[in-house]
Length: 263
Image: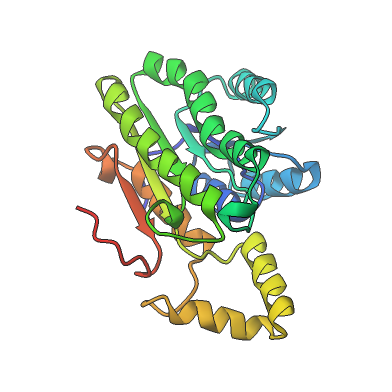
């Protein structure tokens, strides 16, 4: 299905790998020009080349979104290069696997800065440009720990719950400008980072990665790990006219593994 998104401009943070890369390529496939950021120049350039192969423009920008000064330069450079930003996909990830008693203030603070505060800071800078044009889409990538108890992912839970709440708060204040704000909570997604976690778990348990994946998959009713492209499809939906009257919502792309009943 084709959507009328040709020549719109998207900024995808964390766009060089994993979910961010899949989102960038999915939007590029709809004719959108894409600015991406990340911390590694090599992966940024590779993804930018893949985006351009879709027949659109790409602007790779090196930035560490945990740093406010990098965020300011990121948005400035994206606007200078592309002229505008129609779509913002906030996608950042970090994780410290540890029980609550082992987590320090700095670990909480770093996760908050990398994800929640980065989303807030980037939205704050991008919104005036969307308001000026009278149209915009913001999609925040959260995580299933917003809805579940995960004893070894405490900082994830705190931050992702904050992302979901921020999404709702921001949506209520931007709707009058025809700007929607929504959130996608990925389940276990087959990114490089998750595979590295599985490999480490297999090593610690004296098992193999196939057994670890099989164990995780057994908890997913639809019977497989989520792929980055599954998340990208949900993002595209929120950017498309099909979602013109949807804002302030959080949707899980988890294969049915989440057991919470969300009213």
